Amino acid sequence: VCPVGALTELDHTNRLIKDLANPDKTVIVQTAPAVRAALGEEFGLPAGTSVTGKMVAALRKLGFAKVFDTDFAADLTIMEEGTELLGRLTAFLNGDKDVKLPIITSCCPGWVNFFEKQFPDLLDNPSSARSPQQMFGAIAKTYWAEKMGIKREDLIVVSVMPCLAKKFESERDEFRTNGDPDVNYSISTRELAALIKQTNINFMQLENEDFDAPLGESTGAAVIFGASGGVMEAALRTAYEVHTGKTLDNVNFEGVRGIENLKEATIDVDGFELKVAVAHSLGTARKLMNELRAGKSPYHAIEVMACPGGCIGGGGQPLHHGDSARIKARAKALYSEDTEKNFRKSHENPYIISLYEEFLGKPMSEKAHHLLHTCYFNRGKEIIEQ
Ligand code: SF4
Image (cartoon, rainbow, N blue to C red; front, side):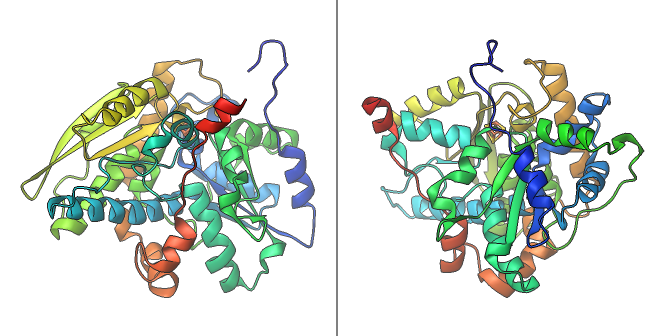
């Protein structure tokens, strides 16, 4: 927050109130995993209190036609990114010298913006998979809208994110169809809390409610996306089982959890030593990228999140001022929700399986590529030209 008020956050609350009151529009919402682990703090609950059910109930009361979960799209991200990882590894093991390793996660727009500006010579390393926010929008405005008989122009997709960079991401030209954005706009956890208070919804008295199907169903792997290391762990759960055909005895990859700025792990995948790294904060990411640029990166896969602790410490969350105890408590809430889920691996999500059977074909199919992948641009020139 700017101390002199010269900079203000882009606030979409008034736009949302207007859209919700428009009878000609169907307004649906998706909520990121980290939001449920922090929203309760705005209502006096201790850090680490998961308020998923109350959050869903509040969003319904606000008037959204459907309350969906970005976690559904996080499972989809793993299907696409995990397949991309396995594809690059297979090519590498077959002697392809040009294959781009390590593959680097691309679901954090703060990180994407950073590498486009600072490392434009390494744009082929990040996964081409879109972020869960954008995958959700693309699927909602095609597969789901067609199923429901809703015209694209009558559908408004709103996201609730722990993040301010997601507002920029939803406006990128790559995520539009004939000018119409896949995600119309994004509001932050703090904006949602303010809206709930403004509309006099008694949050603490709300009974828990469930997300709507089908885009509200998710696995434990998707829930942990909100914490640093969660995307890597989710990818490992799926990549291991898909590659080996074996069931993991233990899905908890403890080595990539925690709030250290850099975590490293080596995973035995049927005799192959898969080396991974997880970084949060752009300073640590810069070191890893400099190592890669110098041809000295020892890793096959890297996860980067820009914010402290990952999205649970995002800029749109209730303010935490770098309080690591609060970040740890939020992470604990997500890992606990993971253990309570019926399914804990993205490839076991029954609605994701149906989505591929009915609509996408298979991961990385032509249709999946068109709707769920993206490309990156050299924005370093913008710095030079300014
Ligand atoms: Fe946004 Fe921060 Fe999460 Fe990146 S880590 S997606 S910038 S909240």
